[in-house]
Length: 83
Image (cartoon, rainbow, N blue to C red; front, side):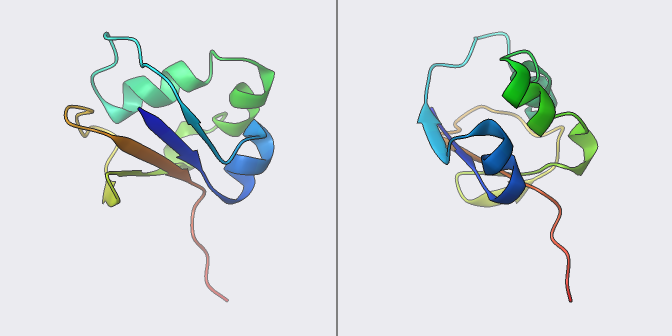
């Protein structure tokens, strides 16, 4: 699975992407976001406020209750602001 990080999520995690095998018990985006917080201090900081993180699976934005089934690439974004 490819995980990709953008903007301040990338800065806090310290990576722009990583390849890893997700634990099989992760079924939804919410599960994944919660798991990310357990991966160390940098991840805990990046995923501190889960509800503001935006997620795309296979380059399509999804809601947090979306299934991880068939996901090949998951991207994490902070909220987008205009201006």
